[in-house]
Amino acid sequence: MTSKLTGLTRRAALMAAGLLAAVAVAGGPADAAEKPIKVAAIYTVPVEQQWVSRIHQALKEAEARGDVTYTFSENVANTDYERVMRQYASEGANLVVGEVFGVERAARKVAADFPNTAFLMGSSFGPSEPNFSVFDNFIQEPSYLTGMIAGASTKSNVIGMVGGYPIPEVNRLMNAFMDGALSVNPDAKFMVTFINSWYDPPKAKEAAFAMIDKGADVMYAERFGVSDAAKERGVYAIGNVIDTAPEYPGTVIASALWHMEPTIDRAVKAVLDGEFEPEDYGKYSFVQYGGGSLVFDEKIVSPEIAAKVDAQFNEIKSGMFRVNINDSEPKPTM
Image (cartoon, rainbow, N blue to C red; front, side, top):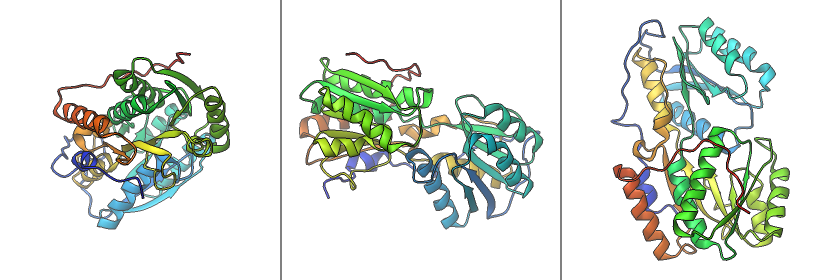
Protein backbone atom coordinates (compact mmCIF):
# COMPACT_ATOMS: atom_id res chain seq x y z
CA MET A 1 0.00 0.00 0.00
CA THR A 2 1.50 3.33 -1.00
CA SER A 3 -0.18 5.39 1.70
CA LYS A 4 1.27 5.37 5.18
CA LEU A 5 1.10 7.33 8.37
CA THR A 6 4.31 9.28 8.69
CA GLY A 7 6.20 10.35 11.78
CA LEU A 8 4.52 13.68 11.15
CA THR A 9 1.14 12.09 11.73
CA ARG A 10 2.28 10.24 14.81
CA ARG A 11 3.55 13.46 16.33
CA ALA A 12 0.19 15.05 15.58
CA ALA A 13 -1.87 12.27 17.12
CA LEU A 14 -2.29 13.70 20.62
CA MET A 15 -5.46 12.44 22.13
CA ALA A 16 -7.48 14.01 24.87
CA ALA A 17 -5.58 12.44 27.80
CA GLY A 18 -4.16 15.12 30.04
CA LEU A 19 -5.97 17.86 28.13
CA LEU A 20 -9.45 17.50 29.57
CA ALA A 21 -10.73 20.22 31.84
CA ALA A 22 -14.17 21.60 32.51
CA VAL A 23 -15.67 24.30 34.71
CA ALA A 24 -19.14 23.85 36.13
CA VAL A 25 -21.70 26.52 35.40
CA ALA A 26 -24.92 26.70 37.35
CA GLY A 27 -28.07 26.02 35.39
CA GLY A 28 -26.76 23.29 33.08
CA PRO A 29 -26.61 19.50 33.48
CA ALA A 30 -24.70 19.64 36.76
CA ASP A 31 -25.19 16.21 38.31
CA ALA A 32 -22.33 13.74 38.01
CA ALA A 33 -23.18 10.56 36.13
CA GLU A 34 -22.01 6.97 36.32
CA LYS A 35 -20.48 5.06 33.44
CA PRO A 36 -21.74 4.37 30.92
CA ILE A 37 -23.65 7.53 30.09
CA LYS A 38 -26.28 7.39 27.36
CA VAL A 39 -25.17 9.16 24.18
CA ALA A 40 -27.39 9.64 21.15
CA ALA A 41 -26.25 11.11 17.85
CA ILE A 42 -28.27 12.57 14.99
CA TYR A 43 -26.78 12.77 11.51
CA THR A 44 -28.26 14.28 8.36
CA VAL A 45 -26.11 12.07 6.12
CA PRO A 46 -24.91 8.44 6.19
CA VAL A 47 -22.27 7.61 8.80
CA GLU A 48 -19.93 6.74 5.92
CA GLN A 49 -19.76 10.41 4.92
CA GLN A 50 -16.34 11.89 5.79
CA TRP A 51 -17.33 14.50 8.37
CA VAL A 52 -19.89 12.39 10.22
CA SER A 53 -17.67 9.31 10.14
CA ARG A 54 -15.17 11.06 12.42
CA ILE A 55 -17.82 11.71 15.07
CA HIS A 56 -19.15 8.18 14.72
CA GLN A 57 -15.68 6.67 15.15
CA ALA A 58 -14.91 8.73 18.26
CA LEU A 59 -18.19 7.71 19.87
CA LYS A 60 -17.63 4.06 18.97
CA GLU A 61 -14.24 4.23 20.70
CA ALA A 62 -15.83 5.77 23.81
CA GLU A 63 -18.37 2.95 23.77
CA ALA A 64 -15.65 0.33 23.44
CA ARG A 65 -13.97 1.76 26.57
CA GLY A 66 -17.24 1.44 28.48
CA ASP A 67 -17.66 5.21 28.94
CA VAL A 68 -20.90 5.43 26.96
CA THR A 69 -23.72 3.51 25.38
CA TYR A 70 -24.21 4.83 21.89
CA THR A 71 -27.17 4.98 19.56
CA PHE A 72 -27.60 7.07 16.45
CA SER A 73 -29.93 8.06 13.64
CA GLU A 74 -28.57 8.80 10.16
CA ASN A 75 -30.06 10.44 7.06
CA VAL A 76 -32.32 12.60 9.25
CA ALA A 77 -33.92 15.39 7.21
CA ASN A 78 -33.68 18.93 8.57
CA THR A 79 -37.47 18.99 8.76
CA ASP A 80 -37.37 16.01 11.13
CA TYR A 81 -34.31 17.00 13.14
CA GLU A 82 -36.13 18.74 15.98
CA ARG A 83 -38.44 15.76 16.51
CA VAL A 84 -35.53 13.32 16.74
CA MET A 85 -33.68 15.59 19.17
CA ARG A 86 -36.73 15.74 21.41
CA GLN A 87 -37.22 11.99 21.23
CA TYR A 88 -33.67 11.20 22.35
CA ALA A 89 -33.78 13.81 25.14
CA SER A 90 -37.16 12.51 26.32
CA GLU A 91 -35.79 8.97 26.38
CA GLY A 92 -33.10 9.99 28.85
CA ALA A 93 -29.99 10.60 26.79
CA ASN A 94 -27.31 12.23 28.93
CA LEU A 95 -25.56 13.67 25.88
CA VAL A 96 -26.96 14.37 22.41
CA VAL A 97 -24.45 14.90 19.59
CA GLY A 98 -25.13 16.05 16.07
CA GLU A 99 -24.81 18.79 13.43
CA VAL A 100 -27.37 21.58 13.30
CA PHE A 101 -26.09 23.82 10.49
CA GLY A 102 -29.53 23.94 8.87
CA VAL A 103 -31.65 23.92 12.04
CA GLU A 104 -29.86 26.23 14.48
CA ARG A 105 -32.89 27.96 16.01
CA ALA A 106 -34.98 24.82 16.37
CA ALA A 107 -32.10 22.87 17.92
CA ARG A 108 -31.38 25.54 20.51
CA LYS A 109 -35.06 25.65 21.44
CA VAL A 110 -35.01 21.91 22.05
CA ALA A 111 -31.91 22.24 24.24
CA ALA A 112 -33.56 24.96 26.31
CA ASP A 113 -36.58 22.68 26.85
CA PHE A 114 -34.28 19.92 28.23
CA PRO A 115 -31.88 21.78 30.57
CA ASN A 116 -30.67 18.57 32.23
CA THR A 117 -29.49 17.06 28.95
CA ALA A 118 -26.09 18.00 27.48
CA PHE A 119 -26.02 18.92 23.78
CA LEU A 120 -22.86 19.00 21.66
CA MET A 121 -23.58 20.12 18.13
CA GLY A 122 -21.64 20.97 15.01
CA SER A 123 -22.52 24.60 14.43
CA SER A 124 -21.41 27.79 12.71
CA PHE A 125 -22.42 29.81 15.78
CA GLY A 126 -21.54 29.96 19.46
CA PRO A 127 -22.64 28.04 22.55
CA SER A 128 -25.77 29.01 24.46
CA GLU A 129 -26.95 28.65 28.03
CA PRO A 130 -27.62 26.46 29.80
CA ASN A 131 -26.47 23.29 28.02
CA PHE A 132 -25.71 23.83 24.31
CA SER A 133 -22.06 23.39 23.30
CA VAL A 134 -20.72 23.59 19.77
CA PHE A 135 -17.85 22.19 17.74
CA ASP A 136 -16.53 22.38 14.21
CA ASN A 137 -13.83 20.82 12.08
CA PHE A 138 -11.13 23.43 12.42
CA ILE A 139 -8.55 21.47 10.45
CA GLN A 140 -7.29 24.44 8.48
CA GLU A 141 -3.77 23.67 9.74
CA PRO A 142 -3.35 20.26 8.05
CA SER A 143 -5.31 21.64 5.08
CA TYR A 144 -2.61 24.28 4.66
CA LEU A 145 0.03 21.54 4.71
CA THR A 146 -1.77 19.47 2.08
CA GLY A 147 -1.95 22.64 0.02
CA MET A 148 1.83 22.83 0.16
CA ILE A 149 2.00 19.30 -1.26
CA ALA A 150 -0.52 20.17 -3.98
CA GLY A 151 1.35 23.32 -4.96
CA ALA A 152 4.59 21.39 -5.28
CA SER A 153 2.95 18.51 -7.19
CA THR A 154 1.10 20.36 -9.95
CA LYS A 155 2.83 20.58 -13.32
CA SER A 156 0.13 22.59 -15.06
CA ASN A 157 -0.11 25.05 -12.14
CA VAL A 158 -3.86 24.48 -12.21
CA ILE A 159 -5.55 23.02 -9.12
CA GLY A 160 -9.24 22.11 -9.03
CA MET A 161 -11.34 22.36 -5.88
CA VAL A 162 -14.77 20.81 -5.38
CA GLY A 163 -16.68 21.58 -2.18
CA GLY A 164 -20.11 20.85 -0.75
CA TYR A 165 -21.53 24.21 0.27
CA PRO A 166 -19.72 27.58 0.61
CA ILE A 167 -20.19 27.74 4.38
CA PRO A 168 -17.52 28.63 6.97
CA GLU A 169 -16.77 24.97 7.75
CA VAL A 170 -15.81 24.34 4.13
CA ASN A 171 -14.49 27.77 3.20
CA ARG A 172 -11.82 27.88 5.91
CA LEU A 173 -10.32 24.58 4.76
CA MET A 174 -10.29 25.53 1.10
CA ASN A 175 -8.78 28.97 1.80
CA ALA A 176 -6.06 27.42 3.96
CA PHE A 177 -5.35 24.86 1.26
CA MET A 178 -4.96 27.63 -1.31
CA ASP A 179 -2.66 29.59 1.01
CA GLY A 180 -0.49 26.51 1.49
CA ALA A 181 -0.25 25.88 -2.25
CA LEU A 182 0.72 29.49 -2.96
CA SER A 183 3.38 29.41 -0.24
CA VAL A 184 5.44 26.96 -2.32
CA ASN A 185 4.11 27.81 -5.78
CA PRO A 186 3.12 31.45 -6.36
CA ASP A 187 2.13 30.56 -9.94
CA ALA A 188 -0.63 28.18 -8.86
CA LYS A 189 -4.15 28.96 -10.09
CA PHE A 190 -7.39 27.59 -8.73
CA MET A 191 -10.75 26.53 -10.09
CA VAL A 192 -13.47 26.40 -7.41
CA THR A 193 -16.96 24.96 -7.50
CA PHE A 194 -19.59 23.87 -4.99
CA ILE A 195 -22.08 21.08 -5.66
CA ASN A 196 -24.64 22.30 -3.07
CA SER A 197 -24.88 18.89 -1.45
CA TRP A 198 -23.16 17.12 1.41
CA TYR A 199 -23.36 13.74 -0.24
CA ASP A 200 -23.67 13.45 -4.00
CA PRO A 201 -20.59 11.61 -5.32
CA PRO A 202 -21.79 11.51 -8.95
CA LYS A 203 -22.30 15.29 -9.00
CA ALA A 204 -18.88 15.89 -7.40
CA LYS A 205 -17.30 13.53 -9.91
CA GLU A 206 -18.79 15.39 -12.87
CA ALA A 207 -17.62 18.73 -11.44
CA ALA A 208 -14.11 17.30 -11.10
CA PHE A 209 -14.14 15.97 -14.67
CA ALA A 210 -14.96 19.47 -15.93
CA MET A 211 -11.96 20.93 -14.08
CA ILE A 212 -9.58 18.21 -15.23
CA ASP A 213 -10.71 18.80 -18.81
CA LYS A 214 -9.69 22.45 -18.36
CA GLY A 215 -6.17 21.56 -17.22
CA ALA A 216 -6.31 20.77 -13.49
CA ASP A 217 -3.78 18.07 -12.63
CA VAL A 218 -4.33 18.13 -8.85
CA MET A 219 -7.83 17.97 -7.34
CA TYR A 220 -8.88 18.99 -3.84
CA ALA A 221 -11.46 16.38 -2.84
CA GLU A 222 -13.55 18.07 -0.19
CA ARG A 223 -16.42 15.75 -1.23
CA PHE A 224 -16.65 12.09 -2.16
CA GLY A 225 -16.60 11.52 -5.91
CA VAL A 226 -13.70 13.83 -6.74
CA SER A 227 -11.06 11.18 -6.19
CA ASP A 228 -12.95 8.82 -8.52
CA ALA A 229 -12.64 11.38 -11.29
CA ALA A 230 -8.97 11.95 -10.52
CA LYS A 231 -8.29 8.22 -10.64
CA GLU A 232 -10.05 7.80 -13.98
CA ARG A 233 -8.17 10.71 -15.54
CA GLY A 234 -4.77 9.92 -14.04
CA VAL A 235 -4.30 13.06 -11.95
CA TYR A 236 -3.59 13.52 -8.26
CA ALA A 237 -6.15 14.15 -5.51
CA ILE A 238 -5.86 15.63 -2.04
CA GLY A 239 -8.17 14.12 0.57
CA ASN A 240 -10.11 15.82 3.34
CA VAL A 241 -11.07 14.71 6.88
CA ILE A 242 -10.30 10.99 6.34
CA ASP A 243 -7.56 9.01 4.65
CA THR A 244 -8.87 7.46 1.44
CA ALA A 245 -5.46 6.63 -0.05
CA PRO A 246 -5.96 2.87 0.50
CA GLU A 247 -8.99 3.06 -1.82
CA TYR A 248 -7.16 5.29 -4.33
CA PRO A 249 -3.49 4.21 -4.29
CA GLY A 250 -1.31 6.47 -6.39
CA THR A 251 -4.15 8.99 -6.76
CA VAL A 252 -4.74 10.40 -3.27
CA ILE A 253 -1.28 11.63 -2.33
CA ALA A 254 -2.11 13.46 0.89
CA SER A 255 -5.02 14.05 3.25
CA ALA A 256 -5.78 16.46 6.07
CA LEU A 257 -7.21 14.34 8.88
CA TRP A 258 -9.78 15.29 11.50
CA HIS A 259 -9.77 13.52 14.86
CA MET A 260 -12.93 13.99 16.94
CA GLU A 261 -11.62 12.06 19.93
CA PRO A 262 -10.33 15.12 21.84
CA THR A 263 -13.73 16.82 21.45
CA ILE A 264 -15.89 13.79 22.26
CA ASP A 265 -13.71 12.64 25.15
CA ARG A 266 -13.79 16.09 26.73
CA ALA A 267 -17.58 16.31 26.47
CA VAL A 268 -18.09 12.79 27.86
CA LYS A 269 -15.78 13.51 30.79
CA ALA A 270 -17.60 16.77 31.50
CA VAL A 271 -20.94 14.93 31.67
CA LEU A 272 -19.47 12.18 33.85
CA ASP A 273 -18.01 14.78 36.22
CA GLY A 274 -21.19 16.84 36.33
CA GLU A 275 -19.30 19.77 34.84
CA PHE A 276 -20.77 20.09 31.35
CA GLU A 277 -21.22 23.71 30.34
CA PRO A 278 -21.96 25.71 27.19
CA GLU A 279 -18.58 25.79 25.48
CA ASP A 280 -17.05 26.20 22.04
CA TYR A 281 -15.08 23.01 21.45
CA GLY A 282 -13.69 24.22 18.13
CA LYS A 283 -10.11 24.51 19.27
CA TYR A 284 -9.96 20.80 20.09
CA SER A 285 -9.79 20.18 16.34
CA PHE A 286 -6.47 22.06 16.24
CA VAL A 287 -3.15 20.25 15.83
CA GLN A 288 -2.10 21.37 19.31
CA TYR A 289 -4.88 19.27 20.88
CA GLY A 290 -4.57 16.28 18.56
CA GLY A 291 -7.68 17.19 16.59
CA GLY A 292 -5.88 17.52 13.27
CA SER A 293 -3.04 15.71 11.55
CA LEU A 294 -1.70 14.82 8.13
CA VAL A 295 -0.90 11.74 6.08
CA PHE A 296 0.88 11.66 2.73
CA ASP A 297 2.34 9.18 0.28
CA GLU A 298 6.10 9.15 0.77
CA LYS A 299 6.59 7.31 -2.51
CA ILE A 300 5.11 10.22 -4.47
CA VAL A 301 5.76 13.32 -2.39
CA SER A 302 9.37 14.37 -2.82
CA PRO A 303 11.74 14.31 0.17
CA GLU A 304 12.28 18.06 -0.25
CA ILE A 305 8.61 19.01 0.05
CA ALA A 306 8.11 16.39 2.78
CA ALA A 307 10.85 18.09 4.81
CA LYS A 308 9.23 21.49 4.27
CA VAL A 309 5.84 20.17 5.37
CA ASP A 310 7.40 18.51 8.43
CA ALA A 311 9.13 21.74 9.43
CA GLN A 312 5.96 23.77 8.91
CA PHE A 313 3.97 21.29 10.98
CA ASN A 314 6.39 21.69 13.87
CA GLU A 315 6.08 25.46 13.59
CA ILE A 316 2.30 25.16 13.80
CA LYS A 317 2.44 22.77 16.74
CA SER A 318 4.84 24.99 18.68
CA GLY A 319 2.71 28.08 18.09
CA MET A 320 5.36 29.77 15.96
CA PHE A 321 3.17 29.73 12.84
CA ARG A 322 -0.54 30.37 12.61
CA VAL A 323 -2.64 29.31 9.68
CA ASN A 324 -5.12 32.02 8.77
CA ILE A 325 -8.77 31.21 9.48
CA ASN A 326 -10.65 32.69 6.54
CA ASP A 327 -14.34 31.78 6.47
CA SER A 328 -15.16 33.81 3.35
CA GLU A 329 -16.13 31.99 0.17
CA PRO A 330 -13.02 31.04 -1.81
CA LYS A 331 -12.90 32.50 -5.29
CA PRO A 332 -11.43 30.97 -8.45
CA THR A 333 -8.28 32.64 -9.74
CA MET A 334 -8.63 31.62 -13.37
